[in-house]
Image (tube, rainbow, N blue to C red; front, side, top):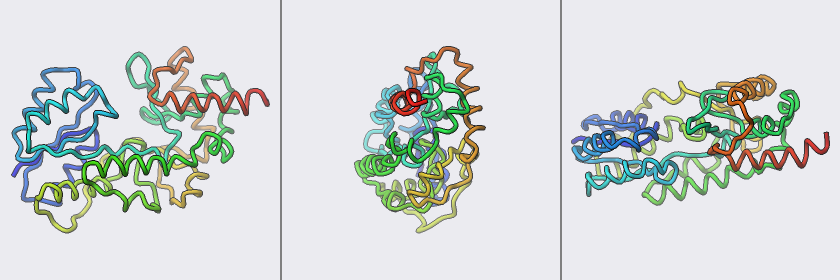
Length: 291
């Protein structure tokens, strides 16, 4: 039996888990980028590769990455009844301040990798001195920005997306002891293993009751920290991260340096525009006028 796994950067981890859970099957994985959704030859090649599999596991990305809609629809159509969907693991509950910034259609480098702080972006856009921006990271600001409520909202969203396709991620969402995400869109390998196991079960493919975890490749990329005040409130034990949230002056310096390279202070293209705008409103209401 041959299983194809199609999705974003999470596809390789799911495929690796399937190989350990069901070593009797052949697994091929394709991780797609936004650029793939605009290239007809790539679309047709990927769709044909999935159609050649006995089972095609295709991630539901249309809502979060609309530019991939044609690619995914083509793969689904060509795979027919052999296609099954699996949910994207997008979760802001541990990292509500973590956003992307776009400029001229491209993702801009941030504090670490492509990730920026919405609060720092707003402080930069509002012309706040770097040293003052670093002092914004506190329990008052997190409450005013709604960060303390994001976990429950994100959990309800992910739970709904998972259940729509027959998956149950409640074991991770119910009072987690530690973050199960490296960033808002990079899950830890444990949750990808759960997705892989449930995908096999839903498809009726025999698997081992348990299996070792493969290498967590996404852990080698950027890891955004859980801010101490939010971790304490959620009861999470923070995981090691790419930068230290106790050193906000250092984070502010790196964030400002990255944003300065953009030139003008317009951030309207940012996928995290709403979060940045809320942070701008917070600064205008509680920082600039009271300074």
